Length: 507
Image (cartoon, rainbow, N blue to C red; front, side, top):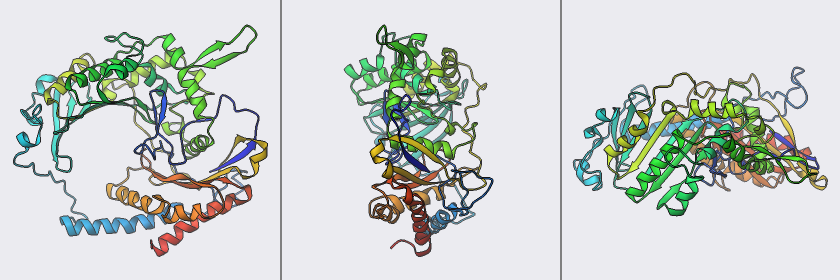
């Protein structure tokens, strides 16, 4: 991906969101962008295989989209296979695991588990003794995770099909989250706008901003809402049991029974504003203004253009911007806004999570109080589809605004791959790639990071390496503030470094 600095006087409505330097961020949370990937290294990824490459003069590929002739996955695959072999060897030595003899082990529960491992509030019952049938749930699975000293259960609500993961342990910091799969088909930002809107009052809590009121008086240890590329999350946490129940109830009422009006859309999404009798009409709105700021950052423009170039199939939700493109946000109508909430904010499209030492049965009772009023919804398909594989690698170039005086050395270059195309990543391969990513790009001494940083072609490394936050894993590496004549050299350097590392290994 080549982002070319081009002199410009202004950017239309600002210039694009999220951060690429340390990995673009997936979360747009309650009015502020959130870096996922454990805060400091997040990103809602790009995904299909593409890269800039010196390459062929294919007459069918015009101008800025040239087809290189290298198989980029090959180098990463060689390294991943080597690490995979090492992992298999470790498993063989430590657990007696053999290829072709896969097995699922249910770790034995410690003898003292029900009473000693659980806190006082939850000790009276384990998940298998909870009266889940009477509360409208069926118990799908129970397992003990000794690494977390937790019993984990998976329930399904019999009427709506909503799934609940419940973790019981001695941690007093109780956690709840409801997550909806939100897969938009355009860049009007409707998932982001709804994330803001549902926290502006609800059926049981008809105040202007319950979220703000909770921030003032709650004993919460965490309170937020996050919009990702393909999901929207509403997590809360508190060490006080009564406070925790209040937080859960406020959030459940907010997501299922929000007060959504045209004024809410105007406030949180977009509206036209007149600053004075002779002033022109201007677009305003909480999300609109937020995304204008995001789109004004070159690194965010680079990340978004990478994602757009990787995901070209319009049926794949990653081909659009869930946060909202300021040039497209005003296209959102009230009818579309309401339809998105009706279709996606439904228990059949929800996943619930509980964690901590709160009473297990009360978790299901709280949920069923809301879920019992809904029927199963199968009308909307919210699955995330895969981007089909490209027949060849691609070169893509996009301009972005810079001052005329710095246009020479302000190019940004990223080389990108998609690592799985039409199937889910195997867990062993996934682990191998995570280790490989850390070895290649995990710190300033890692070979790919070190060589890019010391090449003299640009000022700082961008891309962040492996992105495993979407269904299709991607790998990205590049430099910012590159001279135009060095663009192809950066690409060649990335490819050469990966080839040498695959051939010689890590030293």
